Length: 358
Length: 185
Image 1 (cartoon, rainbow over the protein chains, first blue to last red):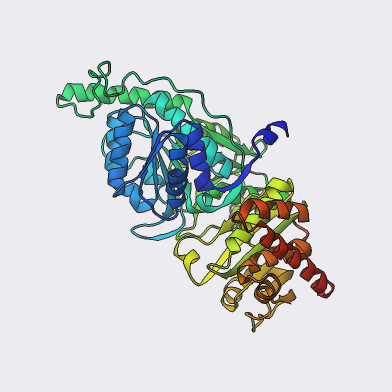
Image 2: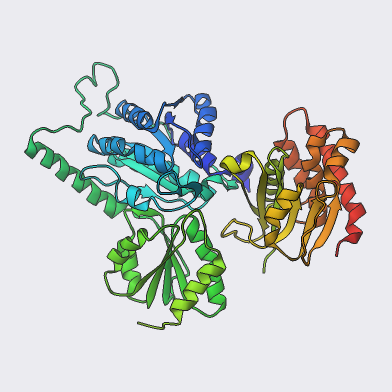
């Protein structure tokens, strides 16, 4: 209790927890344009950034937001934006430029129902766009997927660390439900003062020679640049996998789900265990890099995998790539803002369990 | 099975039901040392027509924070009652505004009719605190939140300068619950 006396937890929305985390991470600038269900992020940033010595700008569009992020990142300060569905689509050109220019930034996506205008309910239908990259060129971007209010704060901080360490844009990807719900959140200590970025352009004589650009007109130069990027992605893939297991030790059936879906699955797994079914849950926290080696190792001991998503089946392709054809990989999804109940998931688990071992 | 209590507070936008939900969740999670989550209507849904706020209070982990089997439903309007009563479980507590709600749905519920808005207007002098009167009734009837924790959460959440008004509304709610409690169960 002693630490909680010093800093008691607050009951706040997931969207607000992101901004609390960003400020603790030393983020100095926020550029954004409101969109449901992500608007509270901009609202909290407008309220909290100036007081924390930072800058909040409501841009005229999502395109402007991401390009302001490019500018602030070039100047060497921690920077972020947040949006949802259509707004994230508009930002994709800018994300590609961030990746090409090797600029650290955090982009928050609170995924809503699509395609098109869709609706404002929770979906996970932007996995393909965000995890497999939505812009042009040979790049990847790390993606972290929080499932709780606490993780909305903690993984935002982590996203800034990864962004700076590898000089890359990093996504925090959650859904409308996780953004909107309130849970108690405890806050860690703020990060210590950040070292100056020697590559940044700081409008002074020392940084005058620094060049932030993604243009390489010579083919060999651009190929060399791309090879350097790929070496960096390999390093990220080796170092930055995050995954959470629940009751997998003796499991014969694995369910895989991330974000809000994983919370429904925890209830379903508990209920399945009461039925005598040996079910375990794997929750990828980093969607790229995906916990492929982890799933591949677990697949040796199990009969089948069922992947649950609030989509038409997007992450399931990464699950299949991870385990090759060693075990059957099934998929169950809901769309349109609907979240399956634990009972609904349990029915799916029972149905596949009845098919027996491999 | 550990303690778990699901409630949905419903009415129309502007009745302060989201604030009431936050107060109950904060009382449980911050001041009572239980787990709690609160979720609510958002976007256009929150700006007109029926609106809702859901609170889950538990001694254990809360996996999925969506109320699916309600122990308590508060409805301050007929429209909200019609729209949101489906998930109230058999034996659950149906708490409706005695003046605004004229048609009760069929179901195996304990129905309690309280004129929340009239009480707020006539006893406290401000119809706007009907939500806090309801918090008082809910605290007493549900047992999911302690009186002390609810008072602390009210003081932390209501606008500055309205603390006494809201505490009076809360205590009036507690007393009202004492009067109707014998009809429960």
